[in-house]
Length: 287
Image 1 (cartoon, rainbow, N blue to C red):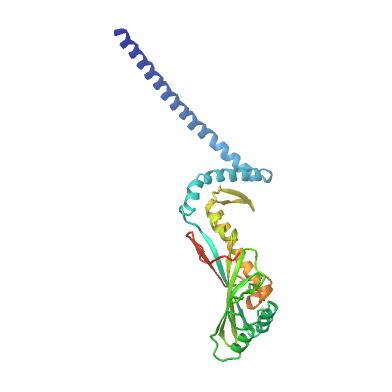
Image 2: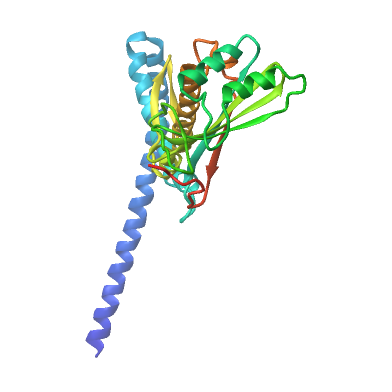
């Protein structure tokens, strides 16, 4: 029994010795590390200064600094990806886009010619002839009229109850709905609502749901940092810009007016998006 107690005591002493040696070794290692930093840091600072002083070394120094910054910023990536993702069960969908074009007296004939080219100058089950309606309302001194163009599809769909107008549409669009507004006797507005289909309608969801890594890119004499948040914002802005451009191009090719008189889409081209943040399909798809 005494031998057993003595053996246990020896083991505890050995353990205490090992712990004391480990603590001393760790403290010594930290002291060496601090001393090394004090000795090496001025040298590293001088080396960094020299690298930026000579054009031949400047590119190398910039790349080293860029990668160091990218690594530091990258530590925030998991949290930022989580903060910018929608909650479970929520779906961000670009359902459609309203776009408007305006016609003054100098563009009125182009509007009527566009209706005729699209073969919209006919009476349908939805309403009358838009060419006659525009002429009649522009000759009035009152203004304030509204004409329903109805659904606009790629191919004409006819039945005993429905006669949809047709027109070329962007690949991202399933169909459109339109109307004509006579604001005054000399100012007419055509408004179209483009209903999007997948995968274009899901681009917002894809942008916010995809995990990203911080990226550093050379820019001028330095570099720029693209965090997960900024990358997602860029993808969403690109989708929004594409939607606006396709709407402007549609008007320019089919019903050009005030905003289509430029060679490039003006910033003032009036559009409005419909974005939903729940799983829903407010507009039936025809294709």
